[in-house]
Length: 108
Image (cartoon, rainbow, N blue to C red):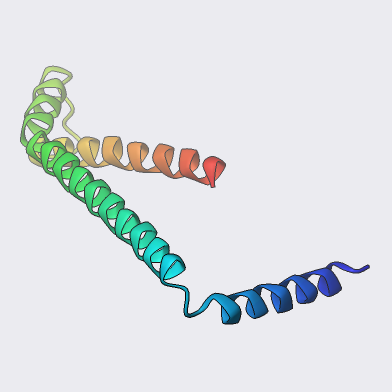
């Protein structure tokens, strides 16, 4: 049998089963419970992500100050001190984003 035939056969069976069990209160309650747990999990993950983003954003001021001090100590003069620290901090954040994207791509 071809994959398409098997997929069509399974889809027909699942559709027939769904139609048969449509009125089943147990199934409806189970679906509701699973969806509720899923929504809670997404809410918790979103909250944790927002908290982490807030904590990371709170560190940007310190990061800019540190980079400005390092740039001043290294006597980087090809840009003004504010632009140098902003550029280096942006490169650090961009590197972290690219590394995260690479890890997520491998897991997905």
